[in-house]
Image 1 (cartoon, helix red, strand yellow):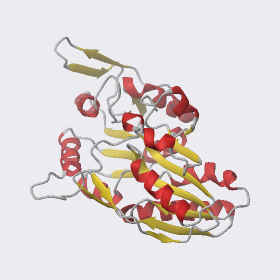
Image 2 (image 1 turned 60 degrees about the vertical axis):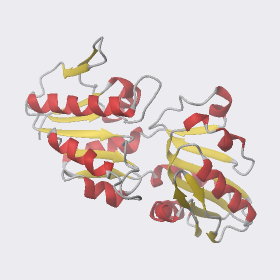
Image 3 (image 1 turned 135 degrees about the vertical axis):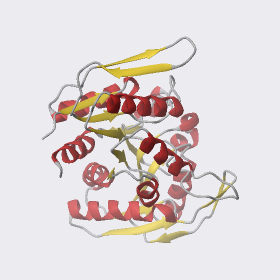
Length: 317
């Protein structure tokens, strides 16, 4: 078996260290330098010739670097590893940027997810691991190299199941496009609780940033409604779904997502009386939130499913 190296780029180092601890390996040494004109470089500080190299970097914009900055750093570092003789390079993206722009919704629209795949291919990346992408079929079709998708459903279900007590539950998608994700969560929750979990989804249309649609299809009456999404941006979609669930007779509403972006601090979301609990993973740190909002939020550690995927990829599982 090839020697193993795991790198964590600077702005994702905290998560990379937790993944490395679960894999019981040290993070491989590397250097990152910023230049006065805004350019940068990164290089491995150890021999990687013949190695199975993994590079972890979450591609969300933060208070220091934009998603574009992080994407360039990841791509350039993967290229440096290939040039240094790594036998295989895997990009590990706990949050994959541009995954939402996966189809044309207006004439001459870009299909940015496909362009993203082409960039990884051009740098010689052998595999991409991503955690809960927006559209799995679009992700798999955009990349010509092998991909590995990590579902958030098992992690979310394991945390939420004890919160239900003896209450009946419903898995709710905030739009029809997320129905498969909500169904994966429903099955995971049923497997843990050994109780029937119903399904529901919200009608949703988006045009020029305006969201409409108010129909809730499915049974939530007398149940704890668990709204499942891939990410939370401003939180408006979750508030709409939570309000509809309450109007349809849900006794309690839990909102859960893989990634919490919380653009603008998502004030409407944290002020909503319709939502009883809010849960996300730590693929994106909640740096946009104040102390009070953070107190209302539950962060789940995503390092275990990520480390499991890296281990399986390295072992050939």
